[in-house]
Image (cartoon, rainbow, N blue to C red; front, side, top):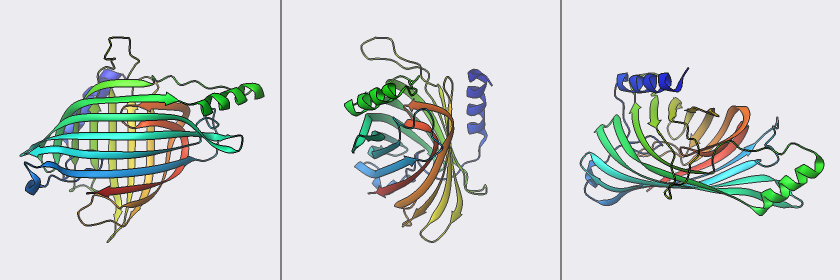
Length: 288
């Protein structure tokens, strides 16, 4: 399937879906009309740790685990319009460097966007996202160790920095089984503010979320994340969410297993960095 065909199909599918209920793609809650006109009417905080499991691939020694902390703020809301800010700090870990835990790199993701709520089930948004990645001395030591052992020293095809404009849409479909939620984001180009050449960005992101089971304070949720273009990826996860309050979209404590087929590392302005393979993890999610 060509990129042009995938873009057309994604937009058509999103527009044809019937409406559902939530305000934004990445686990943000429905619009609360009583907070309209207020500064910082809504905020959420999340933290995640993910450890990759066997079988190992070429990147296992330099990308053994990762962790992140994320903050999402509704800066201002007036009627059906709102401004949103998001930030994520991600840490990538190597296998131990001698006797100590190795940190191979860090990444910072910052974004600000405008959200138009067409209904409680359907939103459109546009904005800008910046992602920058920074490598460490621990990674240099691990790469030197691999080279001395004659092992493969892998490289990453994706750029270390992104500045992208995005145009996105979100729908939730409560009338369908498992109450699916769908997201599409189009990012046509990557650029640098100083005018220097920028690396390639995959132009189409697709995401979905399915509530397979809903209990009193817990739920079982399946997610998919896809990027189409050069060095594409498909990530799938299944999480058990617990300690779920009535006004929150998911539980505050989550255990999950996730995986991506292939033998690469991908860097994305949508989800940060992800390594192909299978991983187990924990996630905390709070809403204020």
